[in-house]
Length: 134
Image (tube, rainbow, N blue to C red):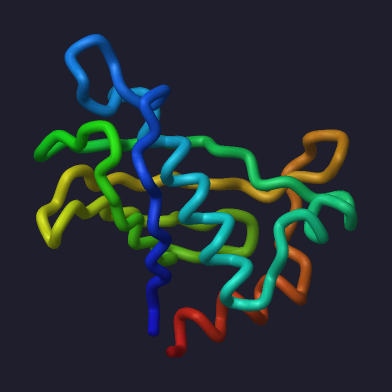
């Protein structure tokens, strides 16, 4: 499977005064999807950081289609797209009852602790290669 689905229950705190999910909260849902995608594919982000690396978000795009409200069960579908030696792109689709709510993508660059761009470590490249080959 080239994607990972993560269920997210909308909390009251995720909504705005109109009772719908505040538009600025979707990137947090993306992060949940991205973290669980990597974990399911065998790469724990916490361990990545412990090795002295970080993934810096350089681009965020979000397109809104429908709304979600308090207590909705959303599915955040995450997949990896473009992978280069120092950067990669994640794609997200947020669904509610099989209806597309939001689509988005984030582009990330690998950096060291001192924020210098660097190549992905071999272990991560292997995971990404296996994901792309699946």
